[in-house]
Length: 530
Image (cartoon, rainbow, N blue to C red; front, side, top):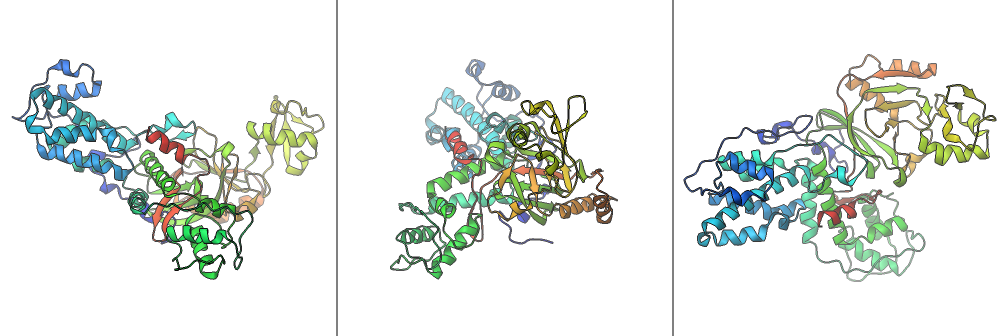
């Protein structure tokens, strides 16, 4: 089954590998390697190697490969680079990071430059290309230096080798274009950035809601709400605005709530008010942060994979570029964030046991069980000492809860539910069923301890087994569940899993925003502009 209109247009997101040129060859490491062939031009000027003494090793290597001569001899090559630097603003980057003003000034006065000035300009063009290429391919900021919970394959690029081919073949623009993400979401984000920049300034009063506003209520703040809804295009403003929360405004509020991933019930509470109070500038910064984040993500995600968008609380199963199924999920709370990672499924476990992790022992199990020893029997948890011997709840030392291992027996009420989805990662997280199935009825679902809980997980398990062409089909799994025995099912086919984080996009309903549950967007934006 295909879903035509998903938030963030996921069926269109995942592109064909054929669109990647040889300049952006993708494998598991996304490594780019090019053979070096010197650039030869009668217009080249010899470079005194002393002028390169304070330059990076890459720059020195580049000019050594080109016999220590200038390479930006053609006006068309220089113009293409300058145009792309200017247009980098459309990617959410800052043209000043790539010396746009200095380069444009030198280009304008090119005929008057001395040989030494031309050499300096040539080196600056090379440095600017190298920097822009790296930022387009990997992002300006290294996420591994920013976050401790980032677990993705590194992407490598040797921009100098790419530049060698770009100048030799006069394909500067085409070369840099191949380095940009061409995910559909990224393209829509670029459109949303252009669209929001064109919007007028939003000098609107903030909306404060003390209590919930329901249909047909009358409140002075409703006028302010109507103005904000009109600004974002959810409401067609009348010549005169009333304080009545009428049917027309309710419909507009529901549309606004839907665009922001809120419960679209038409009731204006604190969540809706908070979303309404975001300014144009804040939303623009959020879009720019998401553009950067997409440059961090892998370029090719595989043919069969599962993607979880953490702030959306949604899981998507993708097969051959089509969205086959979606599931609601529960993700980690702010204090126990779900990490960003890329991996592939190794196995499923039916009727899993649950070994309580140290953090939960310290913060949850220990304090609760200390007050009531019956907690262990009620939750089906067995206590083991350091020798692996079973310990009675009444012999358990509540003062030293971390000196024990706690295992919950399998079953419908196990914390992992009836199925667990394993994949290698450095954070000990996985997808799983849950005994708190009522959580899926909530709109905000950042409630777990880091792992991802999946609604209707057996349906996802059957889909994965079918995709894997596994002999362990639905009928056999149902028999295992009935047996109440723990069984592992290996997954042989590469079925990738991605836990990603994005909070903004654009679709036919307009701007799409999700709550920045881990408060990452605006901090990232500030670092991008510093």
